[in-house]
Length: 247
Length: 376
Image 1 (cartoon, rainbow over the protein chains, first blue to last red):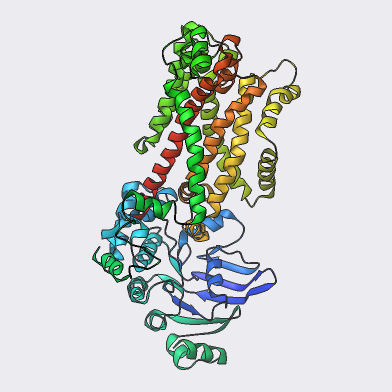
Image 2 (cartoon, helix red, strand yellow; image 1 turned 45 degrees about the horizontal axis):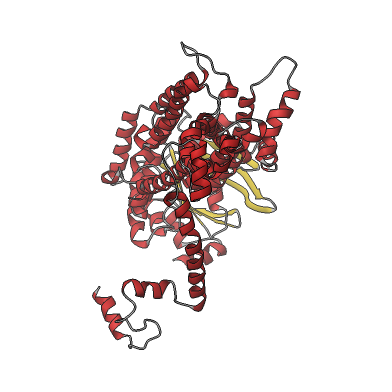
């Protein structure tokens, strides 16, 4: 395990291209342990791509990504080690439809961590209870609502005991009345000291829990600041235009 | 109900949509009017079909049943039925049925071939029950296949029977069962290989599928039977039956691989990403997440391929193996029984139909069952 003063996530001069298209330009970011970061920006600004690079769902071409002291390279061992540290929640939940809610949560602990089934089930029930969905444990994902599915997805990640959680627009595929239940779950997680990187446009959430808000546009980090400052006194004109549009 | 009654009542009696509901839209005549005679084109089709049915069906029924004879008969008795009564002589099957089923398998020992067929058919039926989808199914097949090869081949106190006497139904079943069991894992591997990011594996799998799909099964069988031995070192020989079996497996695997690949493509990218993010390695991701979903989607085309392969096994006739269809042909080439090819082919067709129709019905049932599991 890394020392506590090493950053949880460290991006240095990160560059990425899709063919000719320069998606990420010279990204530098250091995330402290326990820090909560909200990333926002217009669509196509590279914010999802950036956090997907952190657990290697996307490859980067230049610069370095270090997670908990482990550098992400082509080395499969490093990739596995990073993925064991990092949990991810997707916009479209990506639950496994052929498995029950409980099985969704126990699959990775059993097959990746070699945890005995009984222990994995107890752990899964503990986290399903924490996200207040334990009573649906034996249903299939298709039988529960979107908000419930997203909470299951959070529980599924937590079952792997990650030290860092990535959220890729976790509420933007939800019906409005379900956004709050998911955000509440995320706030709970934040209060427990989880290191979180969250791509979201939920500015209420950013104000309530974020230590820093990062604004990205055209593949660059344009501005980063404490939420208070960020919202009341944005420095860059691009940030100002963006905030006017969404607030 | 009340709303439909109301909406009907609102229509004027002369409405073109629902003409005269009191008289002709109910009962058999009403049904016919709505479904068979609702336009001049449909009326024409209905009449045409009626003419065809009236001309064909009575003759068929007369030949099949009314004028037919059913009991055991000699070839002279059958001749009378066929030439004077113009009926089928099902008695010919009392004479030739056993030959069609088991061919040249030693006559006294044909009970062994029958047990072999029952073992395979029984294992197929047992595999259908979902509570058997456990490791114990492997034990069931191990017992069935042991029984099959013991009964067919002999040994352990039974006299040996060389494979060129393995004819008829046991041969058909063996080719089909091994054709599906062995081709399936190959197909899955090839399908995964075609989507691999490793160029060598990908090219190999593409070549395999395209080469095999590019030639008819007959060619594959000819290659297996006549060309392949030329490549073997002198003194080494592989049984002709085994070569045909391998040909059928490789051929079926190429088609199944494309079916499975279609299923893999239908799985959303998010499923792969979620599995990656949880740290599942390639094989665990495929075995636990992707394939269970992909294979479920392609049950209908998989069954389609297997049914098609089941019937294609009859092509082994051309490399000198005698399956049930070849034996039916051989039966009516026997001069006293030359008149009864209809009876023989219908008998064989019924056997194929029983197996294929059950597979088809089973796959429909399975599809419904699996869908229910996921949605409710």
